[in-house]
Length: 410
Image (cartoon, rainbow, N blue to C red; front, side, top):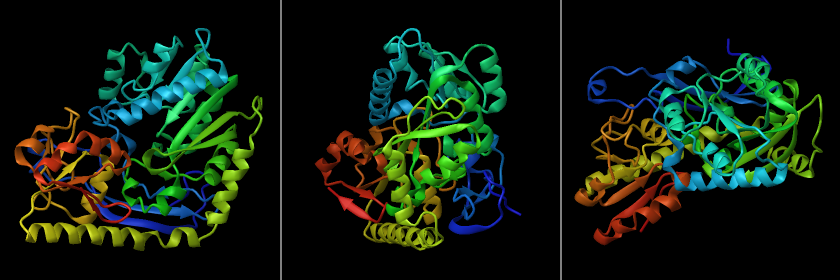
């Protein structure tokens, strides 16, 4: 019987069922294409006790976050600028400097901590995947190569490594034991320290039909209603919240240790909770209709691909992102529909998309093959990608997005 990963309750509302799919970041080499892939049900439900929306678990996290994890944050200019702006803002707001200590949980390739170093703020990162940890070390950033939780936090605190600021961007959704994870922050923060968490907002996921942000690595889909309850149970108090446009609409939550309450709660917290309540996020109806809207977008995308194939159009895609794999597998796409996916990350080039087996190539193939349509899979950075690829208009190429519904643009 499925139990809520936070409160342990067993009463759930069905939210989204995308069928069976391989892990979205398990890119294949040539030999892997000819072998059977591991596929797991991608089923998401909402707990009616604490309103945490979550996957039904069928595999261990090591299956998803292996040593050759291929997501590197630094390949998005938009995300790098976001990281730099964040560090500058935190430095100014919390008076961080050479005598402070910043830690980042899920430091990835050092995309954010490089700016802490640039501003002269001592820092270290925690990152469990070897490939990204090595990339961060190449930037001169100290990395603790482990999964984060209470045990690691206890060890680091015992070494005198408690932090004034802990950043946790796009990781809260990625942890199977959310209580252990959050509890570690209460230990690793200094008495007056601040932890910030950024995560895609479930409110925007539903409002924007962003079903492709569902994949096995995302164990939780988060609202402030759920997060504030989880934090309170694990020694943290939410004292501020901001919205950001990233990943289709995210929240940045500020938290401090509950045993010190060093920061006054801002009106923004209650305002966001009120927004969620008015939307019905503490009721069953909010969650029950999402499956139908996801299926409608999938069917629209399938229809586009069928029409393009019938018309003899060449369709490529851009961005070998995890969300793209969710869309491609849910829609049953194969290389007969999309001939290749372009990605700037050399670690992905020469490999194949999991499930669909579409080859991943470099940007030069767009110029040599001149596809008629280019499907932008990471729609959250559509503007950045379209700016990079203005040249496809030279041969009459057009851009396509499938989320929230099919759109074709020159």
